[in-house]
Length: 177
Image (cartoon, rainbow, N blue to C red; front, side, top):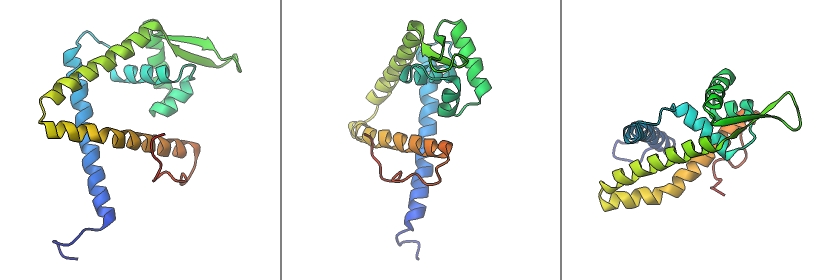
């Protein structure tokens, strides 16, 4: 094929995926930095905030479930949970089906920390978006459903790998529900 001709679909997908991965990584770094500058009083680490957010979405989750979901080592989750518990942001309770197991929940202080983190991120994004030209703002707004579907597809692929599925059926063409 000549350099002016169409490229192979696989290569186009790889190039787009690499560019998207790079862009998302830059966006995450910039957003973390912007949020730290906007709210320097927030002393929680990103891993602590992510664990709180996951736990807020899944009350009663066990530490092992959080470790798998967040792709963290179990001892890392334990360390984070211990720190958040000592700060009054996470509560532990014996599991109803197994008194040896622990179920975790976010306290009022933990929920407030998650909501504050989300509000700070939203404010940083709002301010940054206001500096962009209207066509870029529209393009980013139009991309939200596709980004949500991409996040869901990545979660499904990760869940399938964790559960041992070799090829999750329909993973390529599922959409957000």
